[in-house]
Image (cartoon, rainbow, N blue to C red):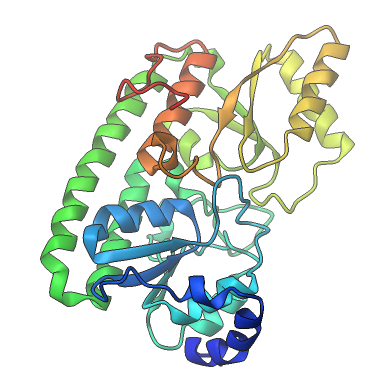
Length: 324
């Protein structure tokens, strides 16, 4: 079994030789904030919301990065070895990192924040026996439970600031509740016959379950799965027979299969357009509204509702422009 200190000892020399250790080990200069390394932007956003000024957050996977296929780099290992707390999603989202992260977790400060969710709230999948769909952030009410796991992990690491973590979490949960209310309102305005969400991979099942949409992914819940010609032909039939006029691309998945669907439908005289680009496994650019969890889900909800004939404001829940 590995400890983070052991891992650091093995790779620090390599990292320093590559000129990376200085930035990987840099602190905020105050010595007061706890260093938290997270895998995904969604977890990073939750840590910032709950941790406030008490945390310094490093996110391994940025915008457009597919967590299903991501493998740790040497600089990642240095950051993980030097962190006070490591938070990852779990539920086999970080499939290529999972073994490494579990070996790292021998001191209790490496936490898979989604694996504490009750199994009765999770969605299983026939292709992955004994595993669950990891994309729980697509339902704000379910993501709220993950935020509580983040809160508890921060309290365990830094009990002196427990009151702040609890207050910040409560305030953020209020925002998530408002987001869920907005999503319910605008998505319920989509005509029942139009509530079909077709995307590149099966990332939206929790969304569909929460808001009454039929969700169709070209690939499975992992982008590592392949979509063959038979699958494309099957979905072209679906588009034509159900008169589906809009499909959606994802920021972290190639649009190749979506383009093939559109071309296949066009060959049969059925016009299909791209309804918009959705955030599935990664958020938008840091420093933008869509680079936050609230902005990510607001954008997705508003884009889907408008493309499928619902009544959603152009600026989304907060009135911000979708391009901001």
